[in-house]
Length: 162
Picture (cartoon, rainbow, N blue to C red):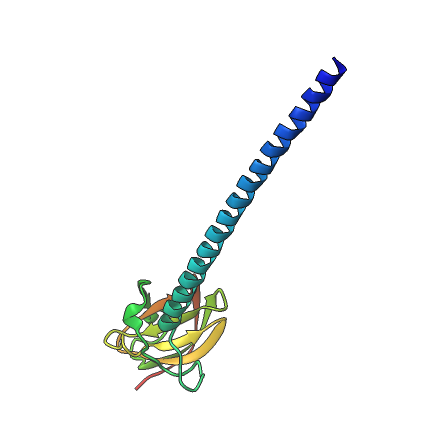
């Protein structure tokens, strides 16, 4: 009887050891497969992030001199955000030919493109958090397109009349 118990325990250990070794191999194969899938997904994310950065870079106007006051018509048509129409006639003289304004954008890393009707291809760039610049007027309205920004605020500083 004692010998039978010892043989039973020995058989159990041998069988469980083989099962344990098989399950370890299956676990290791599964871990290897998961590591490969993870590496593939990481590469895809890097590619998508690279494309997104490239697309965003082509949407944000940049000036050759780095001066945020310069005009730049870099692909304003590619910016998918609709323009906000602003009535400047409520704040300045109706006969003004240009207005100097302080534009603040949120978040501070964003930008605003401001143009008048007929000058859509030549916007004035206002980079965040705040920029002062002059906009030539061709009527009582200006249009504001936000780039990487969620909101803007305009403070009218001065205007010129003919």
